[in-house]
Amino acid sequence: MIDVLLIIFASSLLYVSIANRLLTYIKILSFQGVLLFGVAFLELNEMSTINLVFILLETIIFKAIAVPMFINYVIKRNNITREAEPFLPNFISLIIVTLIIISTIILSTSISDPYLNKTFFIVALATIFSGLYIIATRKKVITHVMGYMIIENGVFILSLAVGNEMPMLVNLGIMLDIFASVLILGIFVNKIGDILKGVDVNQLRHLRD
Image (cartoon, rainbow, N blue to C red; front, side, top):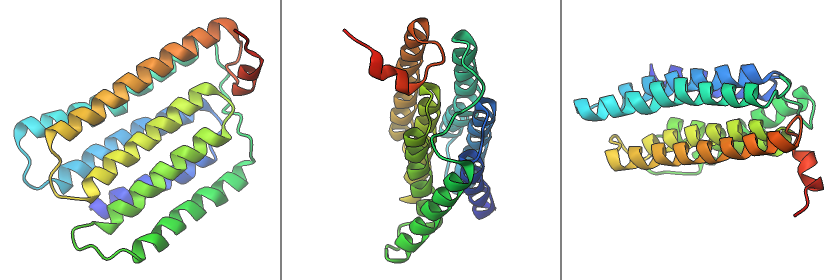
């Protein structure tokens, strides 16, 4: 069942690579949050009630609900157009993300660590590199925030790849990192939106002191 959830998660990376509308990105982030809770719930065999509640807050409440709602608010607050406006055609993006996934599979075959879950490792690396690709190939600043959130999801999966238990301190560190990053980037986008209409990263080149 865990492998099925991870395959669905990897498929969502392919879908986000060809998505044109920002609302689609938000829905995918929310869907990934639900999948992460399912994966963590099934993977962590010896899970205390406190840790289960914390993971529920981190994935369902934060990743699947709070962050998507916050990003949607930023989009409406700045009247950002609904198109993602990628630099590359969707077909090219689909090929590149597919190659990223294939490359991580090839890389995992060269690693022989009995304590490393290769399925988690493959999906985690593919998610991190796909998030970096989204950041590098999208024009709007808000899509960079979404790309960073995808990277954070990859880090979450990677923490599950190296062991059967996830200490609460690691959970807290990831959650605080996400919160601080989204808050800072959200404020940044709001301020930029007061000056630049459309929040296109190309317009940042024209800023002066």
